[in-house]
Image 1 (cartoon, rainbow, N blue to C red):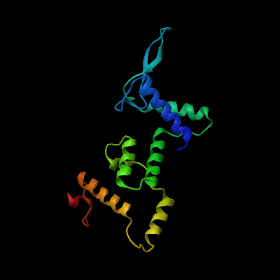
Image 2: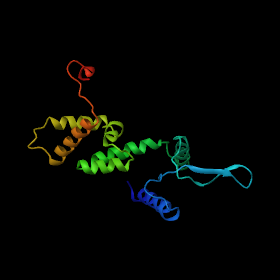
Image 3: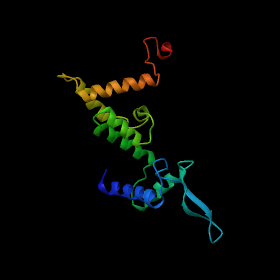
Image 4: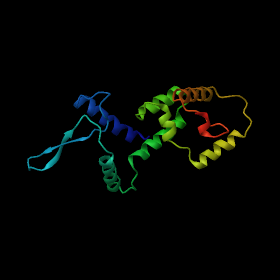
Length: 170
């Protein structure tokens, strides 16, 4: 991410922590506190220490911000997907990817692997073609990542399909 985006998030986080005295368990993007204002109409009066009950308000905020900036609309989850893809590229160990996954708000790293950051078709082709090349030796970080994935799958009790079909293993 660019330094400008990083600074916006850092400033927002500092505001929540220093001004509002919020902690790690409080939402980064909290729901708006609504009350009857001086004109006897509902208006925003601050922030609540709760998450949004639906994604509709944040989508509306994104839509207005993109429109104001003259950019095409991207939904909030597209950013999470982009960050998951970036994590696949920059993380070199299972521990790094687990930390990255937790930063995305995922308790389990399998959520990040299964739901976000799908490999684009063009990149998938590059990877598969690269697998056809002779490998001199295994990469230690990839070996550790493979072991971590196996442990996560085993912990989640996900059975691999057999020749008789996926239901035969259960």
